[in-house]
Image (cartoon, rainbow over the protein chains, first blue to last red):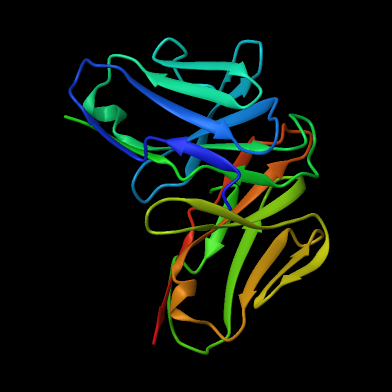
Length: 119
Length: 111
């Protein structure tokens, strides 16, 4: 069964509103979760690394004030797209691993993704 | 040139055929992932490998570190194997989720 649950799977919102996406690790504690974005026919791109109890680490070119990440517990990270614009329409997906941030030996478990459409 | 290149971009096969998807990369890596993305978008991790070969059911993944190349093989392909297969590498010294993704290979297996 799925070890990472992402919600919602699909959301349509109006321009200017904010949208929150949740990523939960089931059956394990994830000190670190990762948020990716995928535009149509493009590769996945890492947006930010979400660290439990501390600030997220954003990749170059990703606006931290626009994409708010909160990792309040060991099983939940949220991504809030603030003041959404049509260009924010994309597929957002999270992942988590058992091994924590520096463990390259643990496989990644992905959520099922959220397709955001901003009208 | 992308750091992770996959070939082919699209692949159509008949049920039962042996399938190979290739991945070449240009950076030093500590691990390589093969992922499967279904039409709805969900991603499943198939393999994570740093050397040699791994097998799981009808799937086989190999990697040649010296040649910076990996292959994913599917034996006795089935229509349910239809998906996008993505190669992703973990840059040497990078954090776990800081993967560099290929653009994917869209596989369609016809009955």
